[in-house]
Image 1 (cartoon, rainbow, N blue to C red):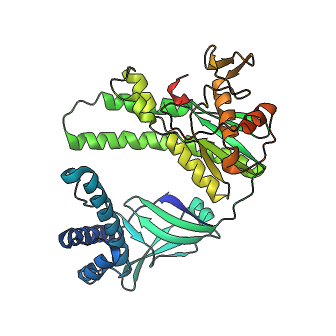
Image 2: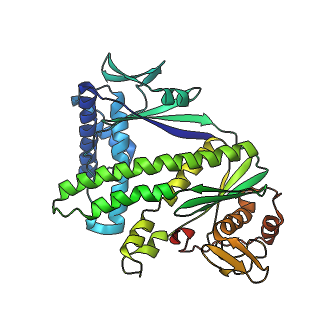
Image 3: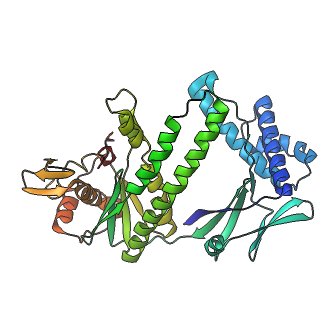
Length: 387
């Protein structure tokens, strides 16, 4: 199985690169206009019409195919939205500078060689992180923006046969894991919640009625928030995948859907609580764990979220709140942390998904044998309970 990974780094563009990015943007927009005018629906038909017309741009011919490919994707998305929304679909138009190259670039030692014109090249220095990442891998494509460079790598992955699994319960302020060996680990996410609060507070006090200024201000604080939170999520996801690789465990997560519908305006929550929960980065953590696990050959399975928080992980009976984030089971007579209970239930539900033989504690084995499987989606998650 072939897996692909994107490595990012910052760089300082030269005037030649900026000019090349602008030419590529114009090429994509020309292809879009041509496709809309002549109702072209496939890359082959668009390539037959647009390839020679793009010769007016003084750029290497390798950029013509990638520009046509990007335009085809934008036109396909536009037609899909047109079917859903009718005339309200926005006509695609590329405004941001970017460039994609699959054919002309080369990685030479510590440099990336980017063709500018026929026989002319510019070079970008790679940092240590990018060099370590591309070592012994095959670069597939290069994407340039005015301040960033990304290289898509490919690697042949041999999926491991797991001997157990790790169940991951995602919450607003923590991530709790339970594995087949009976270990429980809790990763703190309170710093991520705290990092989002100042950005949200600053944006809420912005009163100027100017869309352009608002877009700049919101974009600035949005980048600040993403940079702070992504670093924390990266460390947590890397730690989980590293442990799964060492123990030869699969990864099991909840398939959370429709969670945002719970926190719409008018649902009864306060503005502060609703804003905090709507900024919950549950999917970003899922995305990072999934691609890092698959890159290491670790299988990833998803289970329905129904019952993971309220059902007892020992006997399967319904539990009831017994204090702050603690549940009590009247049948078993135990009190258990709701995050630990949910992580164990997710682990037990994922038995079939990752095909492992549960060798964990008795409570995990009992729930796994019970086979509490369901495909009914639930609009509920532990992130709704703020600690």
